[in-house]
Image (spheres, rainbow, N blue to C red):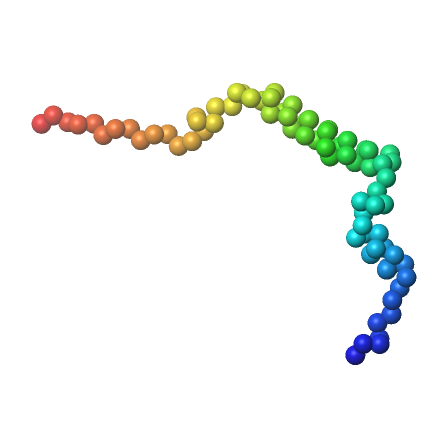
Length: 75
């Protein structure tokens, strides 16, 4: 059963690099751009929208109206 598997040296090198990414990581323009967009721009835009729309909507008014109390009739 075991002799049919061939080992590709390129795949083996990729696996070793993938398992130890901390050793092979280097800051470059692509990494800085990704961190900037995902770590700063998107959260900053969400924060801006949250602050800009704070208090604009009355969510309590959107729910179902409370039921009126029954009216008692005098007999």
